[in-house]
Image 1 (cartoon, rainbow, N blue to C red):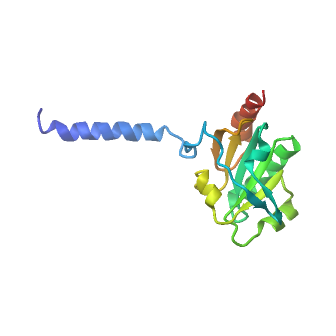
Image 2 (image 1 turned 45 degrees about the vertical axis):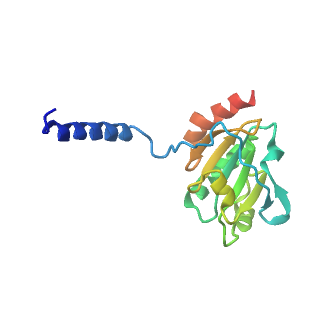
Image 3 (image 1 turned 180 degrees about the vertical axis):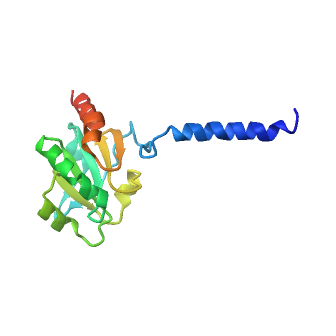
Length: 173
């Protein structure tokens, strides 16, 4: 093979990889947990540490685990949508992630809570078990406790209508 063709071949291979990368949505980070059981945990509830919650309490139900934090601007933006979902009967559980200042209880008291239960993951270990890279992130869990979807970023009306609502309806069957 002619040595002058090697740089051209390397360039073409790199160009193909970059072109493929440009077609991907950077907000859709695949999760290695899709199709696997939701990691178990038992954490105290925000504002009521004597009461605890774990995902096994949701067994037999389709639900969403919403990872959020009071310091997260995007989480506050999605709060209104979550309140609407809660009013529609969507089962939401909140995982208050790395809230070192313990601001969650006051924030939820002021804005309202869309959650059946909100637990404190102060050291972030449960978030690590779920592969959380930032907030907000939301996991859809089926009746058998299997993670079926991960939404990275806030839940918007569009995300709800196009992705989550059809999925929850299908899983509820």
